[in-house]
Amino acid sequence: MNPLSRVAGLAIDRAIGLSGPAVPFVTRRNVGVPMSDGVVLLGDHYRPAGAEGPMPVVLVRSPYGRAGLAGTVFAAPLARRGYQLFVQSTRGTFGSGGQFRPFLPEKADGVATVGWLRDQPWCDGRVAMTGASYLGHTQWAIAPYVDPPLECVALNVTAAKITAAFYENGAPALRNALNWSGQIGTQERGVLPDLVPSPMLWLRMKRALLKLPLQAADVDVAGVPVAFWRDFVEHANPGDDFWADVDHHTADLSRLPPVSMVTGWWDLFAAEQLRDFAAIRAAGVPARITVGPWQHAEPGEIRVATRQDVAWLDHHLAGGPAPEGAPVRLFVQHADAWLEFDEWPPPEIERISYYLRPEGRLEPDPESGDPQPSFFVYDPADPTPSVGGPLLQSPAKQVDNAQVEARTDVLTYTSRPLDADQDIIGPVSARIYVRAELEHADLFVRLCDVDTSGVSRNVVDGIRRLSPQTVPAEDVQIGPDGILAVAVELFPTGYRMLAGHRFRVQVCGGAFPRYARNFGTGEPFGAASAGKRCRFEIFTDAQHPSGVVLPFRPRG
Image (tube, rainbow, N blue to C red):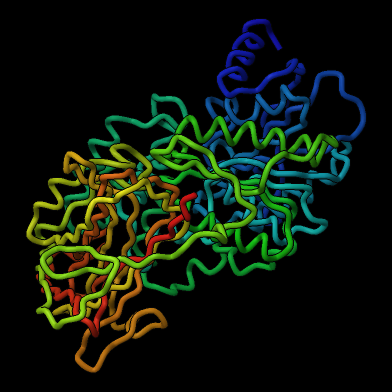
């Protein structure tokens, strides 16, 4: 390691928050790993300088390249802590053979790579994995299956059910999917370093989102067809078998090694990752999770994940101390406080209902009378816009919702001011009684925080796509009058509503371009170019108590 690289490395370690002496290391580039079909995947082998004999290996499998930010931020800090790493480019990326079809080959390729590593004279048979986002998916793809098991994994900002990130309760997550398609479609010919957002890509994407039909939107943003985008568009129907092998939430989780997790309240994977954590713990596997106030891959999220990964590897590979504190560590937004719990969801929360009432009121008691339903009309030619939320690119997170709430296609229901601070910690849900004019429709529900100045900012939300294929379902019931009782799962949160603030619930028929607009025709969303207006009736009477359920942490 030359002196300039050493100084730069120490600066990166300080920025991340890592301390201690840096171990010099050597790197072998472009090491080929053969797959059973003859394809060769390339990897970089990091090893402490002067090390003798076999050592454990930390495997990182990435589609984003092995140099640049990926190597500088994710691999080299671990190498400077004395770990042996193998950082591999996934199939079809950055010199590895084959075609890049995201998610599809990662189980077979990952299992083969672990077997190859264990056959190397410099590996003592112990293999751990680390990484975030897609690098977390490559861990999920093999961790429940490889035998002998891995030593430990760090499943950061990812999910076992990866398809939930691009089809949320049946609604295609349009903006995130096109954003990522543009990134991976241009990453090997761009002028910016790996993982740096491109302003030009963002401008092209904004234009592409408005064009119809959407089948070729990948060419608009990337200049060439992108395999993932075509798969995303062509296999969007619920239950499409195309994606059967890329989700791992139904695997035998008891076969997982110890798990470390980091995510953020504004990360697109947060809801599924918290569900994964609870399932992993229920399967008897040691696991820890940290949830902060972050958007996906925000620098603060990456810093905490790297520090937590180092401590996890130190414990499981080097005999270091076990991490201190409770297994669940959550940041409470607007309280500027971290809380620790033994479980998720926290067992001490109280689930309190707030009901939609006539004249836009939101009350803790349901309606006792028989008011007329409220209505709005959703028009796919002028779709209800989305603002903020868990997006891959800003503007995201929490924003002013005034322009959305002023529209005639959005209903709002607002509570009285709180008389004291109230912490909301846990999953949030809604049950809305609705009658839609069309069989194909979306129902979007959002919880907002209205401050003392009247500014309404989003906290959590959720969407549900309705169609003859999904109605009736276990959580969508049809009444004799044609009214649907629709359960909508909103994101979980850790959030303090301050005294004097009010809850507000929005109800509408979409959130574009975060989600693909529903054209009301049942056509595939990528092929449709025209749609039908849909009239929605929202019921709030005594027989149809529409409302939200909030997880309150008891005060005191």
